[in-house]
Length: 101
Image (cartoon, rainbow, N blue to C red; front, side, top):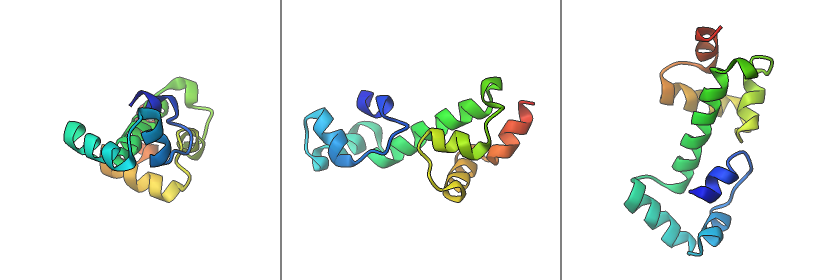
């Protein structure tokens, strides 16, 4: 998890995460499922969504577009990001930003 948090804005492959943890990809997936009840990919997406959510609520990021904030945290496709964000926070990224203005 430390490796993931340190690389959260960068593209990551399961093989790289597993190598950093010193386990196989299968062992990594099994460990995440057993310990956290989720997959490594879902864990990464959740961490990224949390970072975007925090930035959208921060005055420090108001000069950046929502797409720029999403890209900062590793989301490449804005439409996919928006759907994931809405599902996770029950509001759109722009609604979150408007609440903070």
